[in-house]
Image (cartoon, rainbow over all chains, first blue to last red; front, side, top):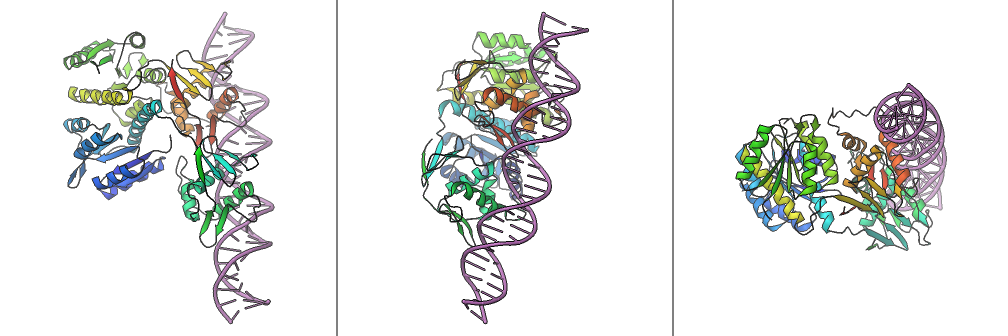
Length: 245
Length: 245
DNA sequence: AGTCTTATGTAACAGAATGCAACAAAATCG
DNA sequence: CGATTTTGTTGCATTCTGTTACATAAGACT
């Protein structure tokens, strides 16, 4: 599965930030939210693999939200709360939560539970869904995201390093959109452990771009695909077609 | 679903009796067991919807049993233990338990959790035929967890060492998820002993990975299955299908 | 145009991560 | 116990990636 996307719902900004940051450091994409409206907009809009839901949300009630979501959607929910008395926990399970964690919690324990719930979801999903592999085509080139294979228009296989592959993926996801070096760097790290995206010298991306150009541009000195936007960053300047893998 | 059949595994007769009676009073069929052998005979023989597994079983280790069952069978497991410290709980989740309950517990809470896990299982499994034994297929290869047999796409049997088998199991359980060396090592051991898993040289996993590659990769120099995530660890980069065992 | 300033390209280097062969230690088996 | 297999350790080769320094290109301003 791809990187898990976790919706963190808490009305206390400090708590919310703590949790999102921790999850991000441990390889998830954490989406902050503080109200039912925000939760719904996320669930309607993009993919969300799990919801961490605080029980007390100011004037809203987490248990109530959980109950409603359970009826409408099939997304795993872990309740988080300062109320740890047994009957409180049972209420959590009663409204259909997949797990219930008492605050304050050990972050590693939270992570363990998140993983447990996710792997359960994954386990069952693998039996039903079929992962459709993605492949891309651009200007005669093709890139198979599954195998990581890159084929030139002449069907010659080109080997990209890990970082070069990541860059290509970022570009393919954003064709015709100029990206700053910061944006590129931020999106490159999404693989596994998110590093501190503190780019020391700032030129790393330039060099990386140069290396990718050497591999996929017909004439690296006069790039047709990966163009420079002076003063801004770089653009992938051709159309990208997404095809079945 | 019919009345749930729950396997209660505890070597303390008093505890076992208390739990089975409580579960029976609350509408389940409770099957007592006190050792891994008994567990297996039940799982092989009749239908079992869930296992309540004590962590300390005299000279046997509940965590170890859990880990083995997880690989071979697809039955929900709730660990039960007097050890409630956070890291103990994490160990429980780490070996794949669906939940972890500390003794002494409120019987009603136990019931709530049992119901939660069961409803989860029901939700996901209702559409598919329920199977007990596990076998896997990936890229033409097959692995039968029960017999430990590995067959190449050409149906040639390959012999893996114990450690190589363990590594393969860890990978099959986490396809497409980058695993750090620490995560791999932790999941390889779980001998129940000190979870310190102090990897002395840290390179043991690298070598192990290399050895497995030599056996299951078409071209070990250019791995298609067991790929390196530089700076992170390793990934099993193909889809894994669980098939009838 | 000519010059200055800044941004980008890139070769060379360095440090780190990984692959791997060879050896050593440990476990297994008879 | 010795023979065999498995597993961990070590050292070196290779690959990858960021940094640096300098070359080149693009504007900006006289």
